Every structure is written in C-alpha cells, then in structure tokens.
Length: 144
Image (tube, rainbow, N blue to C red; front, side, top):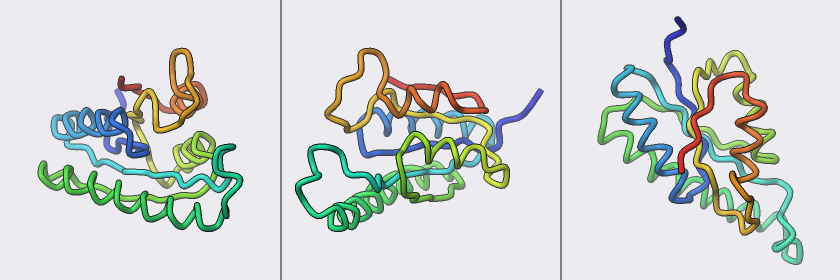
C-alpha cells in the first residue's frame, strides 16, 4: 500500500478551496503528511477582463495569490503542518496537472474545491476541478 506523504491543495481564494484546505490539514495531521499549497495565476485573462491591460491583471492576480497563500499558510501553521507554497502561471487545470506529473514534486493526493471563483457555472463541478479529476495520475478528492 502506498502511503500519502504529500497532499496538493490548489487554492483560488474561494470558500470551497479553503474547505479543501481544512480537509487536507485534517488528513495531513493523521497521516503525518506535508501539504503543498498552489495558486495558479492565469496568463490568459478571462473574457470579462480582456478589455483591460492583461499585464496589470497578472500583477493584481499575483498580489491576490500571495494574500491567499499567506492566509492558508497561517492556518497550516496553527496545526504545525509542514508546507510548501507554489505560485505558477498558466491555464489552471493544465498547470496543476503538469505540476502533479512532475515526479520531483512527489504528489500523492490532490484535494481540490469543487468550484472556484469563476463566474461560469458548471452543472456538476467547476471546470478546473473537473479537469484535474479526469487528468490526474494520482487520487483526487473533490470538496464541496
């Protein structure tokens, strides 16, 4: 049986992503596992923000990413969870899968919120969590 040593928690600032973090913390404590927090800054602005400067949007999104990871790190530290912080750039689903597939990252489990901040409404799952669920080579837990 394969033990879980590293749990990846992709965050986007949504309530669902923080519920995923809370579950990851609970599991990490029981399994003595580490948590990797990841925020993906989209380099392709969504339709709603194409009118404005895409570089400015990326800078603002980077600041937002730092604030979300700071908040998540404070929560993890309250529980003495060892963690790593990652900010990456690209299409979120694809970027998360690329990170998981990079062997040196040694991800054993992904815990992701079912829906993020996107204004697009998916019928069952958010587009990022749905993509990760179907493309991940490791188990994925989707949190509502």
